[in-house]
Length: 308
Length: 260
Ligand SMILES: Cc1cc2nc3c(=O)[nH]c(=O)nc-3n(C[C@H](O)[C@H](O)[C@H](O)COP(=O)(O)OP(=O)(O)OC[C@H]3O[C@@H](n4cnc5c(N)ncnc54)[C@H](O)[C@@H]3O)c2cc1C
Image (cartoon, rainbow over all chains, first blue to last red):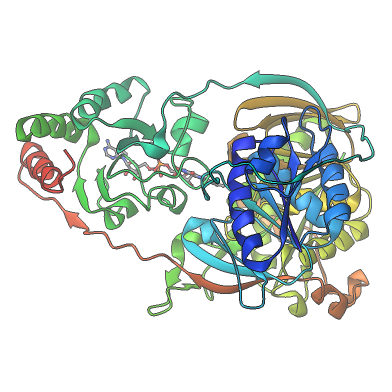
């Protein structure tokens, strides 16, 4: 039995190797990984076989061919793929080519008594955790970044093997890549977050958050429409954005949809300000004020200054 | 251009209640709607049809209720609906479901574009587009936020984490869209009335030439438990005579939580 690991993001690949190593050691199996960049580090991070493949610029059909070749070589019981958007388009394509089960965005991965893989993943918009298992001889899973820790790298013995596969001519042609602005804010480890929703009428209005952010030492984030539709900020919180775990999360003008709440569930204290008494966010908060954010936010900043 | 849009009708997530003890979602009896991102795939198809002409058919795997839910697709602008309704196929995983949809697509015949949402909001699996592309032997363009078609090609902008990628592909191709691609139209009453007159075809396994047992044997993933995590929030509503009073109480609460 083998665990086969791939991610185009090396750091994520190492996190997957950490988990794969743990499971392999439990069952006396081995770990193989498709290499991106330098190979030796994959061995240090837990791979018994580092498969060197010439993948070039990321392309789903090329990576699929490489993975299928690696499958022939290693006959894996589990193929672990990093759940980036690129990884998430490769995984089902490989699963379909093999005709096997696939489970995506797994937040935990374990083995059942029968040695079959058991995962946990969110379903129903992010409101519910599903435990799932697969009975196919090979199972493909995808795992998001930061779900598992990578190992302390150490000198280990492992083979570096050249993986040759048939070159494919990608049918989808990339005409242009436009870099997105890289956010300098690390929401995932921010201790306090103030978040803006559609209750804000203009981008200019976000300024009223600055004073509150300063007293609280908070980072500012938002819901998906504020970022993806309006472009007022470059990252958002929620099931399709950042999953955050601050000690305090202040939701301002946010209705509390399942997709947003799935990203803030691990917050220690949730505070909400929303002028609609029936908004779902109130029931999902520790403290809430039914009121106009344009009045409450400055008043709260002032009160906090006086209280501290 | 002939477009097939994959639509799934799912329970309205805001209406789902939890089982008191198991905290499993109770979906029976909850009104079903077309999953939000799938609806935007349909809207994208309608806009492409408005630009280059052709036909839009919607394809769905569902049950007896699916016909009603998919009337909305016909009202929005789909020309015909095909529904796979086979009681034996109720709990299939994505592998088996993709085999069924592959058979249905073959039955539908010619197509230039297969459109779908990046994920359905119930299962959140994001698998169907790429799986079908592989089974049909055609390319895929995922996470699309803009799309145009001309001269037998599509051009699309993909929304990836670090870049926007502008790509071009020959037809046929599978395209999955993100929520930001458009705002789906709300059909006028007249169109809703007329939707009932548009063709809805229902297929069972036999109509697709599928062997029920053979398909079921290819369903590998099983859900062994479903439960909503417990939310234990204090749910304290801060009430006061003035905003200043309320803000003061909230500030005190925040301080007493030891956060400052
Ligand atoms: C596949 C998919 C994935 C998604 N992923 C995410 C995700 O990761 N994160 C995310 O956030 N969303 C996500 N969404 C979108 C989600 O469904 C909602 O559209 C979104 O969360 C709503 O954002 P909102 O609360 O800012 O806006 P709304 O729902 O419009 O809420 C605005 C709130 O502001 C209140 N308000 C208005 N004016 C004031 C005022 N003056 N003072 C105080 N309150 C006021 C209103 O009462 C209302 O409750 C996703 C959707 C899909 C389809």
